Structure formats: structure tokens, C-alpha cells
Amino acid sequence: MRKILRLDQDAPRATPDEARKAFQTSILVATVRCLLMYIVFPFVLPALGIATGVGPAIGLAIGIAAIAAIIMSVRRFWRADHSKRWHYTIVGAFVVAFLLVLVVGDIIDLVN
Image (cartoon, rainbow, N blue to C red; front, side):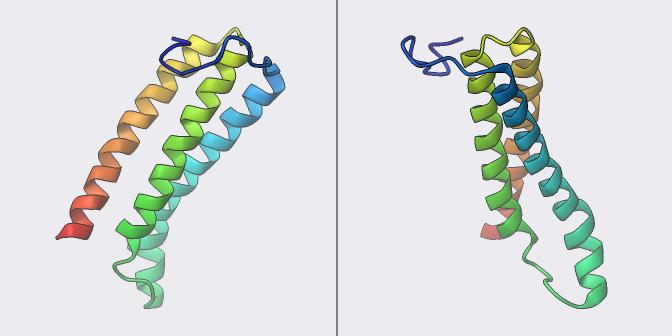
């Protein structure tokens, strides 16, 4: 797994606190994306008469940021040799897969 994540064996180890902070940040980014895409853009902003049709562009940017944050946090879990690194890797992989589906959907929406 360390080879897949391209972790240098000589790199300094991360602390469990750094791994937890990275996890919290990545989940926060994914949560913000979901709130924006499924509550704010389709219901709140159109009700106010603003920002119609900007959802896919912003969703694409936030989705890519969320994927990057999750990958970075998985790397930190592994660098820290965290006891839950496999658990988080599995959860992170499912979230990244879900976000990739959403990113593809946003790209399709933007192209059409």
C-alpha cells in the first residue's frame, strides 16, 4: 500500500494527531460539497433567484478538492502508521469512488 500511495520510506513519520486532523479536513470538504450540491444550489439559491446553473462548475471544483483532501489524509494515516489506517483507507476509497461519479456527472452537465 505504501508503494501505491508513493510514500518515501525515509520520510519523517506523521503523528496520529496529524492523521486525525487530515481526516477531519477531508470529511469537512466532502460534507460542504454535498450540502452545496444537494441543498444550497438546487433549493436555497433558486428560491432567492440567484446562482441558477452554477452548481456543476462549483461542484466539480469542490469534488476535486475533496478527492485530493481524502488522498492526502489517507497518506498521512499511512505515514503515521495509524492503527486504523486500513479502516480509513477503505472508507476513503468508497468516498472517492462516490465523488468520482459525481465529478463525471458534473462534467457531463457542463458539456451539455
